[in-house]
Image (cartoon, rainbow, N blue to C red; front, side, top):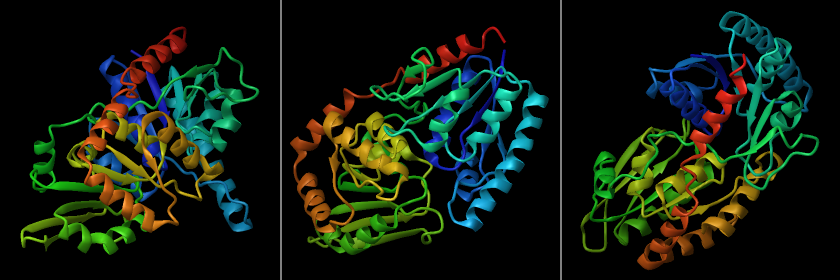
Length: 363
């Protein structure tokens, strides 16, 4: 049995694959400590996993303005000394970082203590943390077809994003009942990632009367701090009841994606991987301010290879037209689901776990 430290805090896109790897390691008899940020979204995400051990560590994202830069330096310095103590105390066989601002401190601490270090990048444009820290890693997992200049070929392994075992397609009727929806009516899901997306929430509010008139139920995950939970009952054109849910957080992602006839979301690598796993026809709106415009690269791949639809968030009229057209076209949605099924990389987690065990076996 070996012990691992997994750095995966800051967003659901980092934390979710960290949880997948931690549970996979536990199933093989290993132990793992997940290092997370001190953000509210991390605290909320981990509530569902009392069987795993999470440790919040200091950290702040890089910023160019003087105040933000000072905060970055101070918090990362604190995080480094906390990380050194963790490495000395737990003597891990390996350290695995998933990018983001919580990764640097533990990777540097591990390197100084001679611990094998691995990094994972899920986006098709590697982030600043992975680009900077790759020189210290014994293994770097990158999406198929993506490479990093200056990183030796024997260090790189091409792998997708490890998805939690709980994210799997459920029978639609069961999924609808879990969410308080009517299985006999169509469902539109809006899922702007772990932190929500204001532009999608606003679109949902505007279009809600039109959706209801056409008999379409709505389940919108708004994001923490972006409004209270609501369950509304509206009327369709035949005076039947139509349910609309606005929820700050959803810890039943598999049910949400399985219940949905289509989902509207962002183009983070984690969201796309979960959409693929649940085979849900999707429209994605890349977040235009994402670092290095990586969501645009993810979205372009998703459209070209997996059959997703990409719309710019500055064009809400196009989004409305595409949503209503797609909901009315059952055959097209079936083709999209079949296309997504071809791109589910269910073996990714097994591949990464096998490789990690090989990497750390000597230690």
